[in-house]
Amino acid sequence: MRPHTSTASAEPGAFRHSFLGTFRFSRRAIDLVWSTSRPLTFGLALLTLIAGVLPAVIAFVGAQIVDAVVAAAALAREGSRVEIGNVFRWVILEAALVVAMAAAQRGISFCQSLLRAQLGQRVNEMILDKALTLELAQFEDSEFYDKLTRARREASSRPLSLVTRTFGLVQNLIALASFGVLLVGFSPWAMLVLLLAGLPSFIAETRFSGEAFTLFRWRSPDTRMQLYLETVIAREDHAKEVKLFGLGPLLLARYRAIFHKLYAADRALTLRRDLWGLGLGVIGTLALYGAYAWIAWTTVFGRITLGQMTMYLMLFRQGQAAVSAMLSAIGGMYEDNLYLSTLYEYLETPVRVGGGAAVQGPDSRDGIRFEAVSFTYPGADAPTLHDINLHIRPGESLALVGQNGSGKTTLIKLLTRLYAPDQGRILLDGLDLAQWNENALRQRIGVIFQDFARYQMLVGENVGAGDVTRFEDRERWREASDKGMASAFIDSLPQGFETQLGKWFKDGRELSGGQWQKIALARAFMREQADILVLDEPTAAMDAQAEATIFEHFSAMSSQRIVILISHRFSTVRMAEQIVVIQDGRIIEHGNHAQLLAQAGHYAHLFALQAKGYL
Image 1 (cartoon, rainbow, N blue to C red):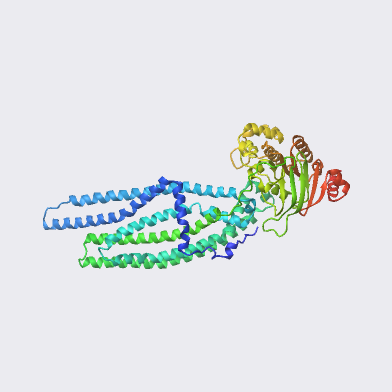
Image 2 (image 1 turned 90 degrees about the vertical axis):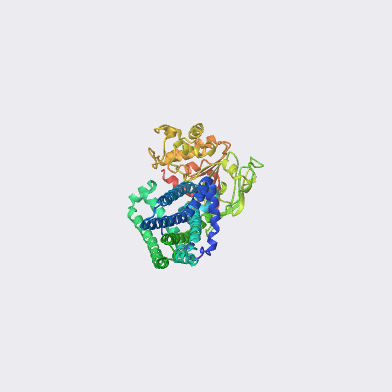
């Protein structure tokens, strides 16, 4: 359980794009937000425009208030009649503008909040939709899981963040343009000072955004290991062994060690980022107060009025904030684009184009044929299956015998098109599986793997999972459970088929291993059209007599079906019409029980060893 080392950490510069190049996802993010909710996106854009214009207008009105007050005070000192109504009109106008500004900001927050919820769901659905198109081999690839972890951790919030920053950039651009119109009246150089004052903090922000992203990619395997350790420590299906073997402190220590490793990298980055930000921020502050001194000196010598001085000071203060916000938005957009690359890297994972379109073969009496089939798992050094040749006709039963890891389950994965052979071909009804429509093919097969799923759902839904088209069909639940010999214990449950299974949810009931296997058997019978039944160690949690009873029951109902059984119990295996012994991915013996005993080979040896246990 050592933390996995990804190739991402070995190539920290592999995803450092040019600054402008990282903005290639901006348009896609905007399109994504727009398609999520057009009314909310339009409202956000309109409110952003209003919020961009209002600050300059408020500053202008504020200057008019000050000048009106100064003029009224001068008239009062001279003993002239004072018209105070002009001052009040400007005050009322500013109050209305401030209320409008507050309303626009609240509206922006409202739109962002609703968009965040909708967009988070939309992106998560995109991630899960993509997962449904991927092949089993990709789910068994550690680097793929790193990619998936990165996409799920950050990408769901980044599209809205990118659009929000884009609108914020537009808002501040509008505000800065309106400030510029007023500042030109003071000095054309004022805008240049304003822009240069915000550059230092921008440089610091963008410099460390790239480093943070590189760290994010590098740490994905360690993050996955932490999540796995959380699962082992806190899940009920691991709790027994964790407690019995005293694994808790060991696993928790590894969990802490990964945190300290990641925290050390975070702390170093944060320290550098803040120190640079502080140093460069001081430069911007000095520029701001230099502008203050310039405006004050100009006012003292009577070149601008007191109201204009107030306005220009406000414009400089708000202008610098706008410049900082703009540059920060650009830096944030740069960072969001980096993180969005993880989402689209995942979404653009190539998938195999679906196989053929056939829904039936030319010869329904031919059954299943394996012709010189070989297969090697991706990344494996040696083949798992070598030159497999088999023929199983309708109405026949086949038992696969061999040690764990000999290739028995792999052969079933090839039959169900979870993998494709590297060499040779597999035919059903005289037609290569590559030419079959995958949905039509899988409707023909009822399969129970040794590690079948135990869904934290209702009993009936656990059975119904065998045929998604009849998932909530209560009559089919009953029929399938009768065939799977599960009805007796289901009827004894408090709410029968409506009983919640598992301990994750309220009033959930846990079943014994044998009861779960009967549920899985019933699930295999949900598909009425399935004429191929595959049982991969389906009764490992049952005693030998129960397994024999179930297999006899299976055989009696499967006269026109192909039954493939993987089992280590020879009391059951001997009932099959064909028995295939697999060792190291090769078929070493093939025949019925009597023939294989007569050969006195590997099968006979294993049968004799097991028989001794009953003497």
